[in-house]
Length: 175
Image (cartoon, rainbow, N blue to C red):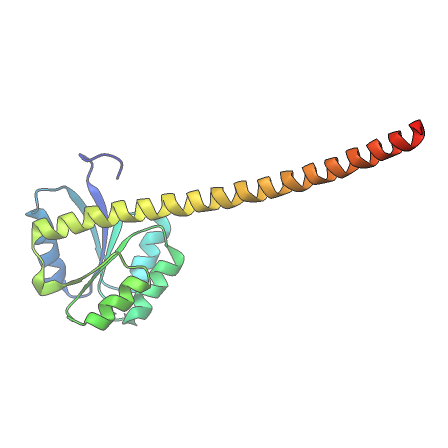
């Protein structure tokens, strides 16, 4: 998503058709524009991600071909640049905290969401992920700059030692 007016490209990985329809309805009523691709198996979601680059993933943790945090781990390992919001029927605080620790941007219980809130959380998750990527890139650039400074400092030290040696040789020659 590059502009506010562009539709947010969203991949919904949800195996329950009623929940997928509910999420679609909630987002349609949010006042924002979403282009939703829905799949009901993790393998189909991974296949879609290999050829498309959605702005965000809404992910159910209980799928026919994957369960629990392994579902999140499999996606975030291969596609760490895409923000993920967990949508689940489980109101489990420990699972929510572990999901966030593993890289999810948010954890929502399906029965407790409403359109404006979900829409806002999606936009915030996308912006947080962009900020994380910018910070990661800045940290890498800073590390590269530090390495270059260290190399330059070593070169200066070597040049100074050579100058001292030349100065000593000159002094010995003069005497």
